[in-house]
Image 1: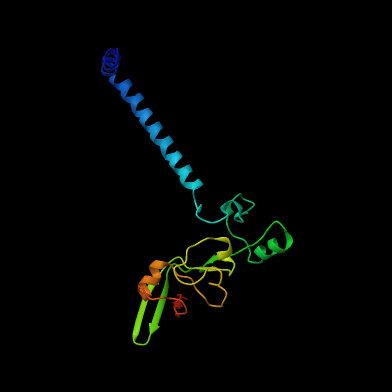
Image 2: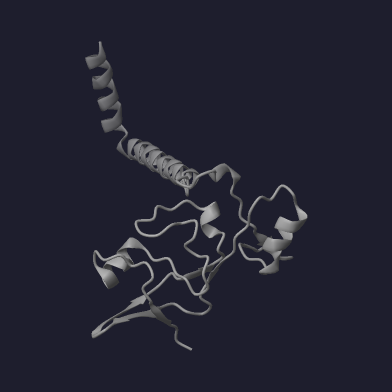
Length: 178
């Protein structure tokens, strides 16, 4: 019985080639578009889900009079929110290095000297790791940014500079172009 259905379908497709092509092509494009939209939605809904209490993390965004939205506020806004709204338990600020696409990182120890250009450096408050969960190989997330001029580096960057050696309490010089 199914063999007969396939025969009839194949005959109809071969008799009306242009119409069949348009229908099959449209169906394929529609399915591909739906799958891509579905994958995008799944990816966006799983974004940053590795953080503890992710359902309680929020980001402040501003909207201009023209309807433009961006995630930027003046620096005092964070502490004003924490002081004025009892619902806000903790705040942190994150800022990129202004107008710096690449920065030079230098490490000198006795006669050894290493330097690399890196991107994606950020200034953050000492409360950053109270809100965001990252695994530390060396050091402690609770005290990582307590001291002035302290820095947290990725495992990859630590490997470039220090190899398998413990990078805690080592000095790195950050040179930004002026």
